[in-house]
Amino acid sequence: MSQSSSPGWHPDPADSPHPRAPWHEPAALPPRKRRPWLIAMIVAAVLGLCCIAPAVVFERSLGPSEAELAAAFDGVALPADVLLVKKTSSGNRLCLDDCVSLYRIYASAAPPPVLYDKITDTLRQAGYRCVPPAWQRPGVVWCGPFEPSHVSYWQRRDDQHIMLAVNPLPPPGELHRLPSDVTADPAWQSFADVVVSGGRP
Image (cartoon, rainbow, N blue to C red; front, side, top):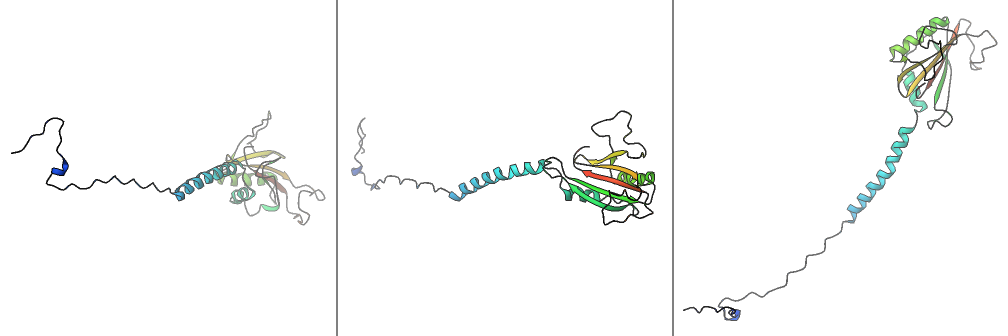
């Protein structure tokens, strides 16, 4: 016959027929190991981003290089009888004083109006279009037919334009535009000044 416990009374565990397992304090959790390699990677990524982002912005702010302009214009296949007799360049990508520009002079046995049409037809076939410059002059037809000493502007992309002027070849003794090591062909009748630059005219 079992004896009921009175309120407030608890049996002594020692009187229990079942052995009592010894009580142990729970072991403390080991401290989390820090991952220094992960922290180092995060720091390196942040530093790399801080270095690369300004470089990308700076590169995009630069004007086209001489090689980029030359590659773009060299893709324009001018007629074989339009001869390159001089080429120079000036400026810099930072556009300090002046952006990069290519200067080229072509000579031809064709009369000036014919040479003008040959070059402009080739530019159109290459995707260029004649555009008026940002500054205007009353009474000037920028994209009209050939006129002596007339300058026309051609553009294919927003970052590049071509300035073209075709003139009769000066008489002997006035070929100062040609390199000293180039002998003018007596058959030449005209020459073209071509300037390839970055930006809008």
